[in-house]
Image (cartoon, rainbow, N blue to C red):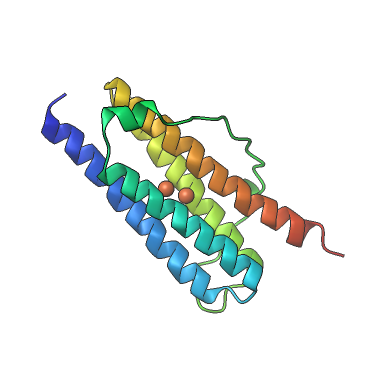
Length: 150
Ligand SMILES: [Fe+2]
Ligand SMILES: [Fe+2]
């Protein structure tokens, strides 16, 4: 694999992380409860770390990544998301964010399948599990505050 192709793939992933950073920023502004705002800002921070990791990527960094399997509660898979807007409810925000994480999982899974470079495969494996863990946190919040209500 040429250096340019490698760089292009990393650049593409960086742009995807930037979208996630932006999206968590907007959702955190819309969120009315402090707990939800805090969760969204924590996730935004993790997306910023992904961007940083990608910007400073080296073979050694890829080798030192810890990849752990993450459970999928699939709660949001069966829910329909509302378009983003300033009047979004607590659950609308969680569903939309979880759907976006699922899309990130799918995008990185696609990329993992397409690349042949071993380091890149490992990098995407890591990012897939990271975005799955974000989805899990959002679905756990949904389960705790929406499904367990009344
Ligand atoms: Fe990310
Ligand atoms: Fe994420």
